[in-house]
Image (cartoon, rainbow, N blue to C red; front, side, top):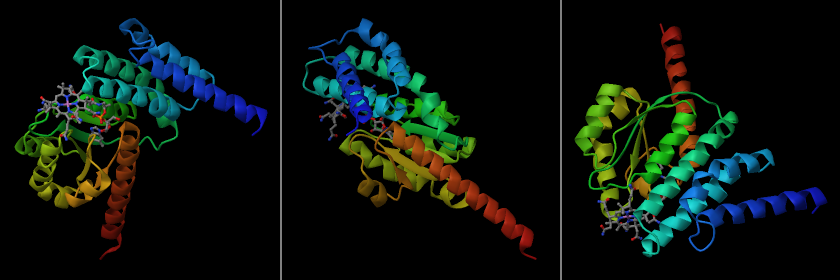
Length: 245
Ligand code: B12
């Protein structure tokens, strides 16, 4: 390894340690410190740590770390709020960098957490990413019944429908929503993307979702891919109608 590579690697490791310490109640965790996360994010960005590393290795890992502590009863719900507010703050600074390399195509998305489920921290981070990239997002909130998803899709005519679920019991409700929007998928090329802590690619396939993303970075990538395909299909159908007959 060259000296330069070594110093980049060192900087990256220091960054990860410092960032995770902010989410660790036994280290530097405090509302005051987390409220100043923007400064840390900006400093490391200037020092050359890629925005995606800052988000995945720092903010999202930190959030995951405190979520585990919450599960063990070592921290409480206000701590989860403080941490998620800090992640959102950091993401706002990172967003312009994260989307610079992507296509930046806009589109309309309806998103919500399915019926029976009130988890929304992850969904809200997905929304921050999508809005940062220029998508128009209609957030239906939490505990959303299939019928409400259907009426929102019929009203807003989105390009993409996003479904979030965090419980093994509510994951099943995603299938019901997907069934209810079948006509819109067929007629309007609506695509459905799903996510949530326990959701995985195989499950997404089994409920006939069009896409799955493991985190908010991948959610944006997948939505941009979907838009590319939709625009391609639309252009193809225009060309076909021009040249047929
Ligand atoms: C915080 C939390 C809560 C909070 C929620 C606060 C809120 N407003 O969201 C409260 C205290 C309310 C809560 C309640 C419950 N919870 Co809870 N909760 C959690 C916890 C600790 C963290 C979740 C979180 O916010 N993670 C951080 C975010 C950033 O990650 P994320 O949600 O995974 O989101 C990312 C990806 O999944 C993805 N993503 C998310 N949504 C979407 C959507 C789309 C379209 C895409 C593409 C991607 C995507 O991108 C996100 C960002 O990167 C998890 C444990 C865990 N480690 O996941 C348990 C957990 C989900 N809860 C659990 C349980 C059991 C419950 C309760 C039933 C507890 C109870 N007995 O009352 C209730 C259920 C209430 C209900 N009806 O929904 C279980 C579920 C287990 C299971 N097998 O079903 C978990 C896994 C904990 C556990 N291991 O026991 N919970």
